[in-house]
Length: 191
Image (cartoon, rainbow, N blue to C red; front, side, top):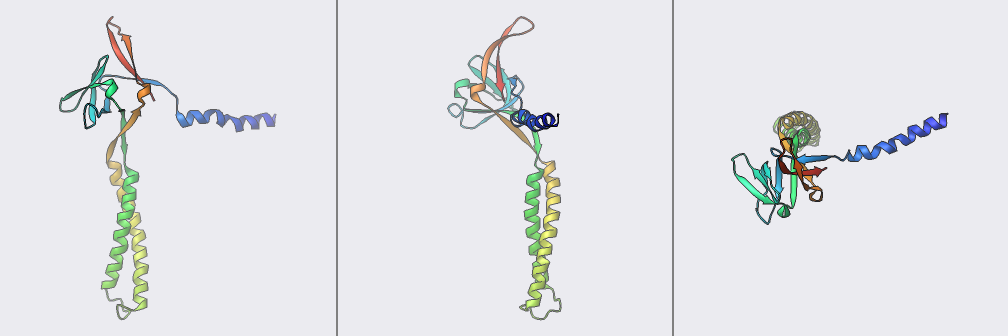
């Protein structure tokens, strides 16, 4: 009984691991209104960013915020990305804060120590240099911690778009019937 229970406990993660790593494959159709980023260098030198205006049998119409519409043929598309929400940049802000805060804290503490008369004698004295280096290390640590906290706060406030690439071999067009009896073209995408 215990062996069976133990083997079930040990083997069960093996069945769920692929699902956790790769997620469930699902088909999500591209629809008008979805925000996309399209790379079609044979038609446009810059990437085209906007929302899907409509999808035709041979091309996709993309309209940006200034109401400029691009018609991009499906074979010309080399890369297609769909907007997947926004993310905060707290980690990048924290790293930048540690670097800047540590550099400013260490350097500032060292320079202030060198300019003050701490009673150690001449500026070239070994005791004064040791005290200033020790202060610089403490300033580096304090500046790094303070910079990390401030940087993470600023980074959390800065939001950037997340994009999910759509594999072009999984982009499929197919005719669909609507509820009102009309026919149209739908594109489905598997992530």
